[in-house]
Length: 448
Image (cartoon, one colour):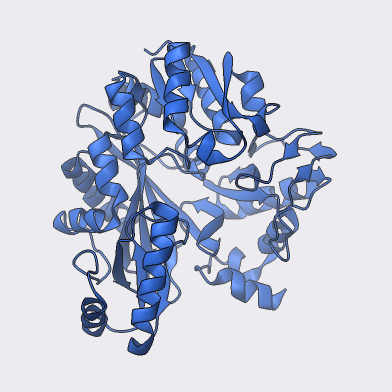
């Protein structure tokens, strides 16, 4: 087992990893920017090292600084959390070269899954359904026009190395395609230092459903059910739940079996997520693999009883899955996660600043993952997540009731948050009926 782990991240996920390490008796090292000097992950870790100024490119994304901190503190492993360097295959490779265990997939797998056209090809070869689209990277406007004509408009242009909605363009007619292709390539280059773009058939109002995978280094693979992530704004998730109200037990089992085989053929290890879109006919199509832990992992933990972050560490230490989790995996109850962001709930304008008052809800069925506290200053340099509020119930109705109660008792003063938005969603008739898709928020806004 590892003796000391460095957490190459900040905020609530850094605190979450520290908690898992404490449960395992592992010492921790926090890295932090000058803006995060007073953060909770700095306080709760056994050691802490400042790695640079507030700008993430000069701190949390600075590979030499992170590796130097790891070598100075003599750690055995690095946990990247999510975001920042978590899916950076070059970082994973540097860790391996430095004889520091990277808690995640191997560099070659991360690199292959990070290029979405490679992931599409791998899944297609394993029999997993994928959206109709280009065979690979679009090399010219002429090839893009031919591909769009073959699969039919509307289509979506997507950055191969992308995420978070950047490098994406919807094309509804041929006349717009050349210009939008150029825009997508330029945005992809600026955001990911890679201009490669591919094409998929656009599903107008899909559900976004993802499956959680956990795989050890001995060939054991488990698919830990799915999460519904359809309520989004600009491709950023706001609310997730598990299981999805849209999946039948039969479809769930069939997909889990297919995905288990696919991830084995890919050689995947550690935790990851396989993302799908569901069309109006209930058909699922693979879109990408996220080779890391997800923000919304607590809802899977709630319905399986499996500590995913602790499992990540044990897998990286060489433990086989049968010794880590109880098998067969069983699913019980329903869980919902609301992302509480420092944003105006009506305009979504960022709201950094000092938290002057804070009350976190609790009682049966409620979990709060946060790094916030009274007098903590939400910095303007990073994502706006203040907390993740998770409600668990024996069924979806009870989970919704508990989430309503928790939102009513969640108090954050001094800044705007999205709590009022989530309160309205919890009362919405379509949400209560499980009728959601990626356009839910635009329809919801017109009703509220």
